[in-house]
Length: 305
Image (cartoon, rainbow, N blue to C red):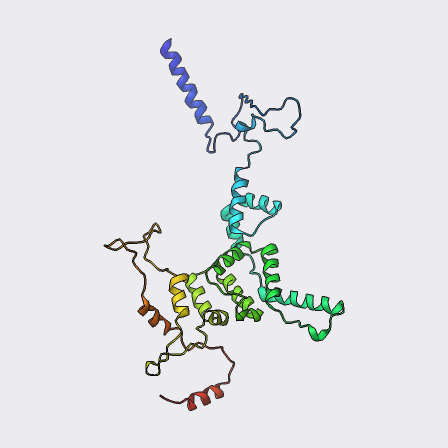
């Protein structure tokens, strides 16, 4: 009889276990016949939205996935409404990312021009002297466009990435280029364009962009003529290696610095490397639309050395 009872118990156990192939987690609804109480159970009705102990095992009201998505969106966007959070929670992180890759890219110059025109018309309508006004945008209008796009734009992932890139591939409207708002907008559009793409392509394009060429001084960089003591500006070459790519010192896979036999950091480049790389960034000037006839005339009369 003893062995029969033990056998019956295990048969019941395995049959019951097989009939309930739970694949989720504890507290997600498996609470039949279980009663849970907690110190926060409010029998007096003082707290209408009480945290009932039963919910700890029923799973009712759990917001784990919603909290996870909220944390993710805080990192991957510039903010979200409750509706957007609920929609993203339903989609899941991977599907949300896929949808963001398909979003239309916001246009900075177009938005900036709209703000410049809007303010121009506003001041004109309020009695401002037309001679003191211009409908051409400046750096202030670019900032208006930036805030508008990053607050209300649908391509939030792209814009969050563009902003991150702007902290590395830096230009500044406090420099001379601040007077050229279209250059600022065009440069930031470049960051936006490549934000979800290939970093090498981005480096190539910013190298050829006038705003970066002006800011880091390789625009109109002269070629090397040692006998006349003419050398290319080394600023951009140094920044390419130090800030934009691999940095000052060799690293291990975990991000720690490699050390030589004497326990010292191992530099990734030296001054000679900078001098040689700077020669690559010479001969870059502002493009001008010229006819083929004009180009041939320039080439024909170009003095030889």
